[in-house]
Length: 159
Image (cartoon, rainbow, N blue to C red):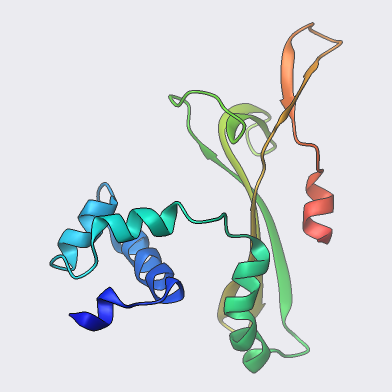
């Protein structure tokens, strides 16, 4: 029991990620705590989730040793631009309208960019970025106020 109470943020990140991936229903800090029979309090999970924002650089530091151990000349970097639709959620900087090329129209949701290193039959994430449309502008075509990101997707991918 003591080991879980004194776990590092890196260990808690791994545990919480596994919880999110394996859960069939709603996921909560309280649910994770209950699953672990209270060995990690929901307050500990909440504090972890409220900690400073993690970036692709943080992810890279975690996966770098694994990537280096399997790196080969025939490995490839796969870049993906995806949208998780959230049609019923209130609009904000993250959940907003994005053009979906697969549907040929704009959809409301979360736009995220991912980078995977793939070699043989193994793929590992090496980068992830949420597109935040923090700037507003007036569209000259329809006169409506719209949102845009101050950084373009190509710039994110290059970084």
